[in-house]
Amino acid sequence: MDNKRFLNPSETISAIITSGRRVLNQTFGRTFVLSLLAGFYIAFGAQLSTVVSQDTAQFCGQGIARLLAGSVFSIGLMLVVVCGAELFTGNSLLTSAALHGEISWIKLAENWLVVLAGNFIGSIFFAWLMFESHLWESGSVAEQAVRIATIKSSLSFPVAFIRGLLCNWLVCLAVFMATAARDIPGKLLACYIPIMTFVASGFEHNIANMYFIPTGLMISARQGLSNPALTWQAFFVNNLLPVTLGNIVGGVVFVACAYWYVHNQSGRRT
Image (cartoon, rainbow, N blue to C red; front, side, top):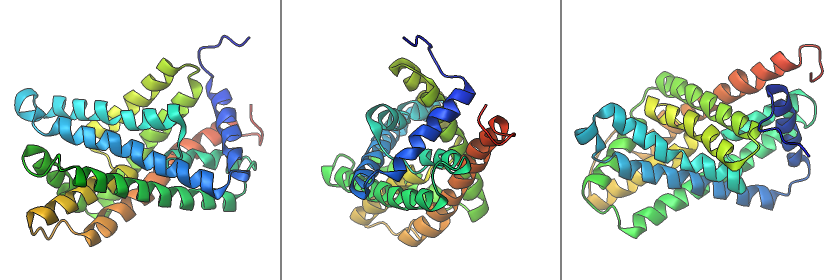
């Protein structure tokens, strides 16, 4: 019986590659449903982060407020990893399987497109559910939701891209460590630290933003607010596009390709 508490980096790469082979036989329906679930799970963390951060800074300071917001947001990736779901940012690591020739680049692209679409629909649907719950009709939570959405929609393309790169660098390291962990507590801790770090640092996650910004847009519309910085066009052009590109570069280049090079310089896994 294997009593190892965790996999070493080379073994973790092998496990990620083995997991990547699932795209060869996984049906469209299964992939799509799992991607919807990931959209829901990340949105659960995002809405809780909004609630926790609404007034924390005035009592504990901005740093502690960010720490707490990041801490509760991490439940999203915990649900994805432990319960099983297809998250676009984490699936950047499937590049490892393509680099080792275990899956084709076409299969990788197909997976990304289906998962991105499913994550988007899941996140938007969850935003609508929160909106229709009327929990945030007015008050400080609604104001925080609109504030978060406005800030994210006002970023310049280069800034959003870099923040997206830094974010998925950490997200993929979280998935890497969670894959290495062999028990539930280890996987939860592996998810918590990097995710808390990226949220507290102010980095940008495209799937989370598929919840944050539409939520702010819906609340603004209900309250009759006119905000030129917060529009659906700004959501897609100023945030979602550059953040998604940054997320891809962060996960693919700085994690998948980096560890492929380190553990496969001779052309085979070591």
